[in-house]
Image 1 (cartoon, rainbow, N blue to C red):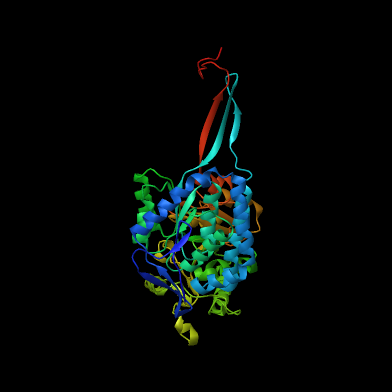
Image 2: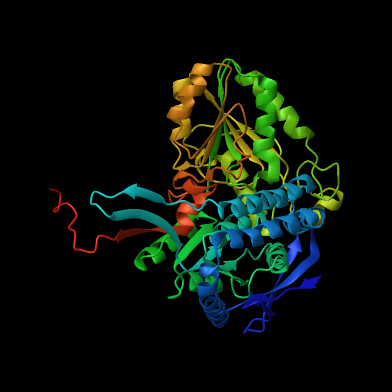
Length: 496
């Protein structure tokens, strides 16, 4: 067990409260991974003050030099990938290949954002008046509050932190209490890379005691949040009153549409990966499978067989396909939705229970679960479950399938499997989600493009990616007019 502290002004310090919580290994719940500070308002105030103090110097450092620090951080992450990947699996449970992928995403983002420091673009345009030029430049906001979840405990902090830093902001990061050690190790990498003191600060604790205080702090200029819809929507209301920007990436009820001409072997792989990868604990997880009626029975049979064959276990064991859920609350939520599905009349083909056999009884394991006979009005087809549960539905046409996808109040990710190039092109246009995959699963976004959803899945402003994603959010545009004529000139008036 490791005891971690808060990072404030370049120093690791205990919480003002003197209190600590515990993160546990979800595959073996009596194993304590870390003790972390249960911080309070005093700690938030100190962290924000440190970030505010560090802001002028970090803002004034040339963006290419900021990028060099991020590049070094990516190099360190590369060297420590195996160690950190195992930590991800230990603290949040995903299988080791995915834990390593979590770190690789941070590596990719570090290199990408380092490069952005040398292409920090504005515009130079001609003026309508002589001896005058006009341009726009990107400038930072100031102190950013970053609130991150447990399911990608290094990757998602890297999205937000690297983008915010390259734009010249300073940061207070509040990671999830279920995976705080991963965030601390990530912050240590940036310290080792030479990040100046106070530019990145890390505060752990509850959402009520830390997150709420942080986002409404008067010296915080912007907020980035990834988490549940209920928390995100409450934060958005608070932040709106304070007139500060917020980016929110929230839930999803993502669908895969499988047409009758699809490659069923490929589609099956995509569904199994999308539905049960990360134990279904991704905002982009494939939780609705909409299958054309001509292949419905054949595909369902294949899916049930594949789900039944998946091996539950500790993610550090090489033969494990599906790891545990994050905690006991998650198990209760998933089992409750399984009961709801049965009560609504859906047919349970496999799974549906908490796994108790042998060492599985020591962790938070739920069997991969497949429902059929699901209708769009059922709660298991409408509400985010965030676990290894998939609802299989039937459609009679492309049009009906797309209509079923778009009925959701969420709009994060969707996929279609078809060999028809025209249907694929139509799907790009017709599906109302921020991410659309053609002949691929609903998970697997790459860092060089923006990431975000429509409707209740997000704020409408994506993160990750380049200028159209995080750079646009974490910087603001300043327009500069320089008149070197030596006389007063009046735009739109002195036109003769």
